[in-house]
Length: 639
Image 1 (cartoon, rainbow, N blue to C red):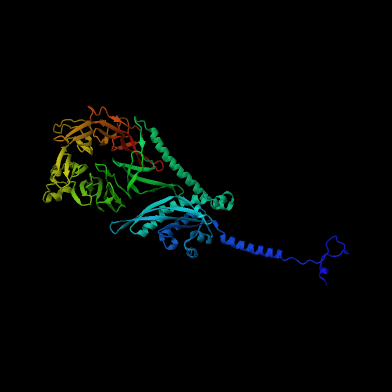
Image 2 (cartoon, rainbow, N blue to C red):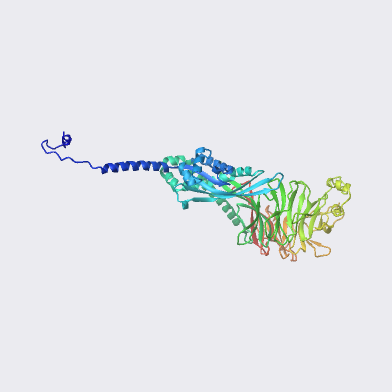
């Protein structure tokens, strides 16, 4: 039978029509089909190799190494970030899976290729640098300061397409370094990393496109989208609250001269003095962030700083940063160096010095005593401060040289030291208040704190302090010599807040006064409370009193000694304002000028080194945290 007999006859062709000649089939269509089949299989295999889940994320932030390199801190950070991402709809790669570790080792730490092999579409990477400070307290204490950043990229992105967020930073402390690292990873760093990474993930074109039209992705990432929207709104609202509060402060000012602000309401600025380098400011800042867990605005406390801040244009220069500075640092009479007390994580207190150049240094580390109001002399060659055995105990006086060696220490001697300033490099003016005998107690009997000393040989250097009958201003040499009385307060008179003129010829005070009664041995009435200036150039030094009806506090001289500025409580107001008097006028009080008028508390005024401005603190309330007080550095033109 021929092949033709097997050929089909087309419909409509007559049976007697000659059949078509036989045709040999061509082989190239088969080749094309096979090639297409093989190509399709290859494409499927290649696609399966390339397929990644855009919701799958590999978190690998370098924190003293990567978690797959053995860093426990990086593992803690990755675990915490992964947990938060998972709660918001992502499917992070689990560091604890042995297959994940094997894949990362196989790709030799190449995050992009490892993530692709693991099916992850995105990588959250970055690096956090650690500064470690070993504190010599007891068995030791380690403080860690972390700074770094977070970056996000898709596995198919070009290297230059990596998206970077704002910096992240934090700090922690513990007895052991590893413990401090784990606290850091599980705390501020993880919360800030999530807050920075999520907007970068959702704004990436791959996810942004899916969130526009893919219902499954929209549903899966609804919590993440809500978090990013809430975070943006909360942080923007917080910024607006701070800006609005500062604007309202400026608008509420009704004083006769303009007020200029030298900071923002987000910071708690303490004005500590002024010098040639600018304004000495201690800052306690917070950083608003949106909590991934609580889904609300929270505040991270920053390290405190001591800095020189310009009174005009320019950048602040941070001279120290750390955990806590109790009280106020003080500036040397020449305005070049600063002394402060460092609270070392509650374990000890350290009187410290910031010289004109070089790093801050601790003069003493003491876990038991309390120190306050340290002040360096010009030079500096020494630092004086108050010292207390307990927080509420009477204050003694301690003077150290700049190497931390003891120069003099004067115990409270039954009373208390209430103020001091440097007269020159080797002498202090010290305000001492004697003890007030309790009812029925003999003033000549030693008090409880004096009994031990009284039982032994009396110290001739301490006898003048013990024998003074009234509040006294002493001139105290720092070489250990005996003190000299410069002024003894009159009956009913009490001095506070001692300050000195730039040339050291005058001392200024707040002054309280209680008029004598019939039982005060015929003492003559004096001008009422207000200000007082002790002229040290007179022999003997003479006190001039300026009676002011309302409360005055915190006086300070202008650089030329002509003016004195202070806090003033105007009649009919509960707020403190900034006022100034001309000490050379015939009647300084009559010519007193009140320079501010607002609803805040203005306090602690000082003149700038050039005498052109009066700078002060303005106390207020954090608009984003009603339990937090804030103070802002402000200034007005000097008369």
